[in-house]
Length: 338
Image (cartoon, rainbow, N blue to C red; front, side, top):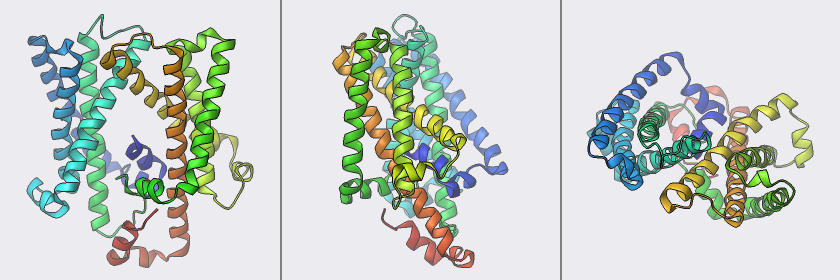
């Protein structure tokens, strides 16, 4: 989900994918896979395969892989053969597997888990949840692949994009600068785990699906917000960094992406445990690991997003606009390490 967060937190990327003409094209790109996914659902239902969670997830992932490749090429405004020749097999494999298959499986599990929380369980009523899992996943994949393809096109045309949503900058941070993130993530993970453990003792409702959803939303939102401010202002203390923003600005980030993606990752894990593993009511220890792990991931992502935003703001403040339009300089900035 990091690519989705990056495209809405980095201003340069947000502006690029929210222009009026582009948004009109994106609606069409999303509708077509949604209609095909509905036809796919009808085919699975005719064979009674939609009741098998593994078949459903595989169908969602494989179909969305094709959708991702097509939408990415359409965003690049080039035929697929030309895109494959220019980007190489490795990039296409990343689009198909990461933005297509894995993302679709995650979204399908999230949809099923959310419906379970709303008392519309896939085990009891497979028809509606199966249809929504296929349609929502394929439409979301089409949207994101189309946006990423468009960003690649803009990069080739010379627009400077420091934080491309391809995961490379995060991997560079994780592999090369553990001193910046490891302690923060570890402390956040342990602290959130202890808080949740205390809540389960004081309030039994915290162990229910709805109670967990509320707890992880608040804790993950806070962890992501604090880490984002730390990454955005590396020279300031966390408190001084927070004081640079109004409570409305902090609340906005807390709600999205903090709380929203805390819920997202929790629901994905809950969906995997409930429907793939087949444990309808996991023990508190498993719930504890899911909540603490989700907060840890959001802490890492928040710090990475803050660091990417800091790099983008530093770039815009120190390099003249005339130079930013230079394709040669743009290619250097695009390969800049985190």
